[in-house]
Length: 249
Image 1 (cartoon, one colour):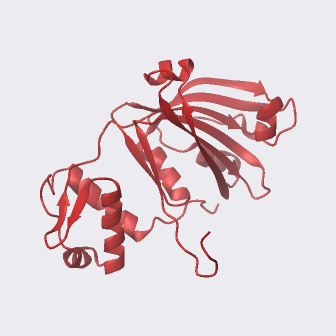
Image 2 (tube, helix red, strand yellow):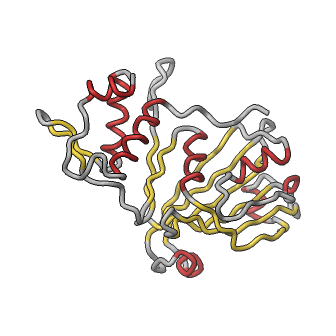
């Protein structure tokens, strides 16, 4: 079966290597990382690729460029939070690889009302519903997730908490389905009592709700995931590239 994952851009691969080297102390806080020219030689990469990689580290707050001096390390990423860098489906796959999903509840529910409309489902369809906590490598609760899986795949087999295979990839592997599109919606919200208890957060504090719908070739929603992230534990970064065939609006 053809994989739905996209090849990670070279500059992100280079950035991830530099992030790792900063976090493991090869380039300690206050030190200068190699110059662009030196990095080009080390990685066999173009200057554009190197500059984009360094720009990513700047966005993460890990380094600062100082004219006439170089690029100085500010420190590693804060372990209590998570910065989600999106570059196509690869970004979603990397997110699951770097975090763990703990399933709290599994049940089959008959959908109706607004939920049925959101799922593009008929009233009364029986979808698999999962409630889960996503955690960082340090076990900090990163998100409370409610996941809905299409009735055709409600027999989905799930691994243990240590298995980082994404839900949509499991569907592809177990049922021969293929996800070709992900639609995403971001909204600000206040954390309610239920979410606050499970996330160890303050009720009424700021959060980011991210809803992702995973669609197959027929345009059907195969999976819908609603994720609630406490604002102080999660940030979101996305890159848009200009297509010369069209104007930016």
